[in-house]
Amino acid sequence: SLCFPQKLWKMVESHQFQSLWWSEGGKCVAINEELFKEEVLGRGGPLRVFATQSMKSFLRQLNLYGFTKMQQDFQRSASLPEFLAEEAAASAHSKILYYYNPYFNREHPHLLEKCKRR
Image (cartoon, rainbow, N blue to C red; front, side):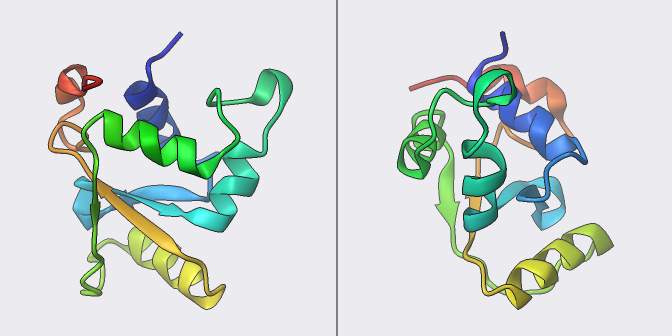
């Protein structure tokens, strides 16, 4: 089975999930908190992605793997998919969380193996 960062990577890369996407040109992961709780953490049985159903526990995992929360500086994303995801979330008044990890980068999947639990 995949470790936490690998699962997260697969989810961000897949088009199956609307609640998270690459931000800052692939350097950050953006999470629409309400949608994520419903779409990802709300899954049960064989469709369950993470062991937890709690947002707090999920965020603790991010922290354990060295992700840091970023403040969105509201410069508009350059890429269309990022822009559209942010627009959709903003219009739904959703809270978007941005997390950064130097080893979690769309352009450099090989760095993922350095994404270790603290």
